[in-house]
Amino acid sequence: MDSIAEAVPVVGKQALRSAQMRRRLCEAAIDVLCEVGYEALSTPMIAARAGVSRGAQTHHFATKADMIVGAFEHLLQGWEAARSAAFGQDLRNVPFETYLRFVWREIFSRPSYVAAVELMLAARTDGELGERLRQLLASPSGERDQRWRQLLRFPDTEKEEQFQYMTLCLLRGMAVHSSFNRSDTRNEAVLEAWIELAKTLIAKEGSAGAPARRKPPGPAERP
Amino acid sequence: MDSIAEAVPVVGKQALRSAQMRRRLCEAAIDVLCEVGYEALSTPMIAARAGVSRGAQTHHFATKADMIVGAFEHLLQGWEAARSAAFGQDLRNVPFETYLRFVWREIFSRPSYVAAVELMLAARTDGELGERLRQLLASPSGERDQRWRQLLRFPDTEKEEQFQYMTLCLLRGMAVHSSFNRSDTRNEAVLEAWIELAKTLIAKEGSAGAPARRKPPGPAERP
DNA sequence: AGAATCAAACAGACTGGACTGTTCGTAACT
DNA sequence: AGTTACGAACAGTCCAGTCTGTTTGATTCT
Picture 1 (tube, helix red, strand yellow):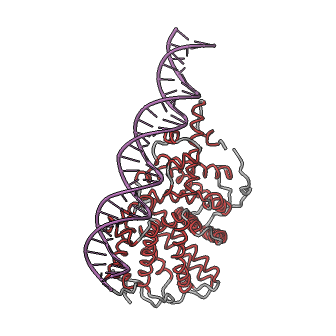
Picture 2 (cartoon, chains in turn red, brown, blue, cyan; picture 1 turned 60 degrees about the vertical axis):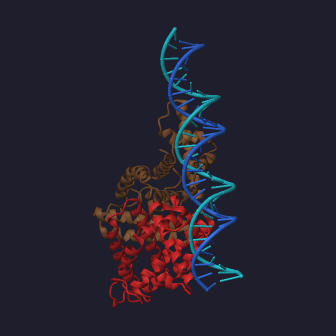
Picture 3 (cartoon, each protein chain N blue to C red; picture 1 turned 120 degrees about the vertical axis):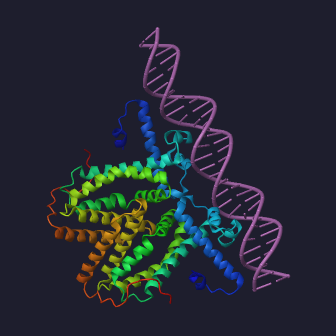
């Protein structure tokens, strides 16, 4: 609940209030984004949703872009928190299929992921927003690459990178499709098929596929 | 140029003008959508882009939703026209890889496709728009299914349908990713990898893989 | 065939509303 | 005391939809 507030070094009473307020606003922004979409989203709606005055909202996020960027960052942090809670930092003993099912269930299949895609598409035609979102994604992307390296361990890193990219695009495409067609029943089956495919690929590619000693994700474990 | 005007049975001079005007407006709408995005799009912008008065615009498309739906339909018609010009109606002798490269190059990798995705995502939070877009897509989707059946000819239609869905999601995901990251160099390689995968799948699944007697797409051939 | 009649295609202005960013004022904290 | 957090109102902008007026094309009647 307050894992993010802890992540920021809170010193005094005022700083705590500030952090909490920012959190409330970001969560409200994500809620509004999921419910009405980026086009209809407005800063007054976010303030109302958070139950605060517009003055407070503009104080913490001066412009609409600031608000959006903050919400996006909050989303990323939430994903990272969920991932970290389920698997910790070392993925070397996590089976690929376990991880894939996890990210689909906990990230890609959620409405908030579609909201994030909506932001990314909006960023396409808004240079400044795009730059800021890309910057936010830069560091997580690098870490994601490393995690997948731990997961897959293809001998050919180029093939591995390609496989990772394909997986990302597949999941993203499925998320968009399900969003437009009110969730598609084929998703689970496709996921399993992709896992099957990955297994044959991994087998063909060489050494990977170490025995899985870690327990499956289960309920989150706090560090 | 006037293939669409011909498609509609034009009787008199007035009907022709009307059809041309609608076409101009739809194309302008797509242009604006590609350039400024759905969030910043407005009906005055479309009218200005088309070089017509706002009165003319509202006359042909009474509401903003009407305008958007019209533009979306125009997009679909354009895709169908391109596909039909390249391959005609019978895909039984078209190699799968040829078709896949074609749809990527001529449809998914274009900015207008991302614009269409933007509309689909916007439709997520706009019930009426969603219903209308889904209705527009219903018939093309059915035809697309049939075309892919001609292309792949898996003995197991369920597996075939799954493969088709995966391909669609992959291409869509790639389109979104490339849009956010100013085009990704990995796309071509991933496409080839997917073709390779499809070949092994087709081989494994059974009878498919008939020799390709048709010539590759090349420049469009009118019927 | 030609005038009269009607509808459709356009043009331009207006209105009510909503949103973004800003400013000024007040209370709480350090 | 001075900074930070918040509240409330304001100014400027823009948009969607409507309404009135004008022109052009189709239709009917003689």
